Length: 115
Length: 110
Image (cartoon, rainbow over all chains, first blue to last red):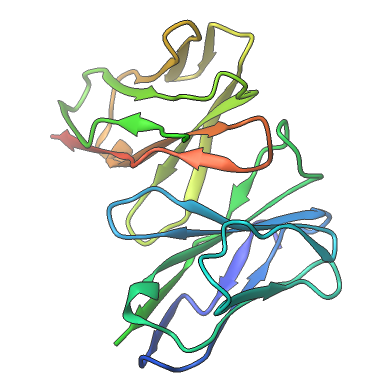
């Protein structure tokens, strides 16, 4: 596809449930990023993949959050035992190679609402 | 820690120029970015400036960078109603991690 795509666009779940959010990066981009945007805030970094491996997961808030990218393309962000505070827009971005001079292109986001 | 600051709101009349300001903290930032976010949409990259530049112009957009004061601005000439959105500045703080500001909501009045 032409840009980064994310599914679902909206997800409503109940407290304590498990959710998976999917990201399809731009074809050929080796670097993939997840950010979380809370209401009225700018995006905050969660995790960065270079290829299949998580090069930096320091932004994940706790061990309920986990992300994978098994084939170096599509990534899934997984949240266990969801809490109301997890409600936010989860943004995925990709870039050609990663690194400080590499522009990141963002998807439309998944809006997660935990009731 | 790292902190990128922006004013929260800006209102301008259609046809006027808009200037959105940003203050960043990490002097090692290599690139500084401006993104636009419309309701229900993701972040759209508008423009960026390399840290060794003072100014960059791209059609209606002009970016000014004052490294000494760590101040970045985005000027939109001939602002249109379609420019109404939230504008985020972001610094590539020497790594792949982007540090975003809180965003400036631009409202263009017809």
